[in-house]
Image 1 (cartoon, rainbow, N blue to C red):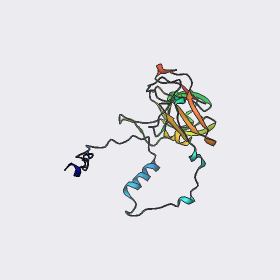
Image 2 (cartoon, helix red, strand yellow; image 1 turned 135 degrees about the vertical axis):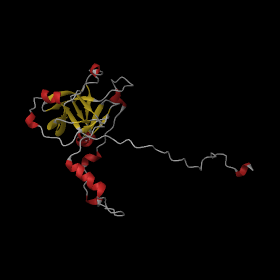
Image 3 (tube, rainbow, N blue to C red; image 1 turned 90 degrees about the vertical axis):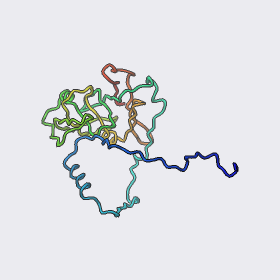
Length: 229
């Protein structure tokens, strides 16, 4: 009898697990949405494409950006000088408007770049440079924060100068500014809170690193100071 029985298989091997019943959905949080973005979303929701129709683009006509072939990686060497384990946020010091701004938080969960009003004044900017913002910011508490306005500032990432749009917010914060996904994507960089640095792709596989200056410096203020190199 035993020769006809496969005892290597579990008795429940053929039983599919029952799908878990969910009570609801917790949606993600985004930055402010402009009127153009809201109209586009409304068009997609209420005027969807006809069912069964698929548009196929000829990939042979699309030119591959040479920068997309750059490899970015983190190694054990990036952990040198760090005290592990840690739960530090990634905080940089970067030039804004030709002034070094410290305590700039790199937040990959943010869909908007934020400049706090205290830093706006410290940069010597005038209200004439501000333009209105059409929608509020919504944080984790669900309470909307209405920005003062927005401003475009040059941000220096290594040798690259970028004009980034910041939403100016008048609220208390341990940081002067927040750089989100937009900034990382534009400079084609990858951030690692574990390795406490940002790596940016470069020609020939070279990488520019935004790296720690002094381990544990400024931690009493809630973070570690960094700068671009």
